[in-house]
Image: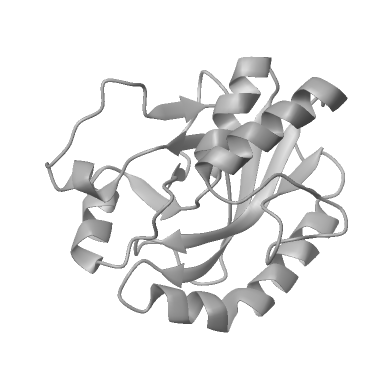
Length: 178
């Protein structure tokens, strides 16, 4: 089953599950209880911390839930903040999920130091729910912006073209997505 956030990132071939960590956790849990999907593929946009270029399309099975205060050394969490759909993962792009968009290049670089390259608001929740239900899952992302002071401006400017590129990519890969 292909899922997406919805609203600005809606696709005729994908089921919307909400925007942000909380809405996705609630809606995707309900969907899994009602429809019992065999696999989940989340598609959407992502911001790059700097190493991945605009409009690149990246697939991943691993996500973090780290807030900027953590990478600045101003917070800690006693709960698990990493999740992967598969136990043994080769070098792949790691995605961070937060309800906040990074707009500071210095903080973005601190994510790169931790080998985390992209941020997407929903992916961590998708993987946590999928893991809880024992459902294989992955994400496919198109980069719309860099995580800097112009993040929102470039997201809006590049969003339409990025969604077209992502749609074409998904349609080309329609067979064997997992």
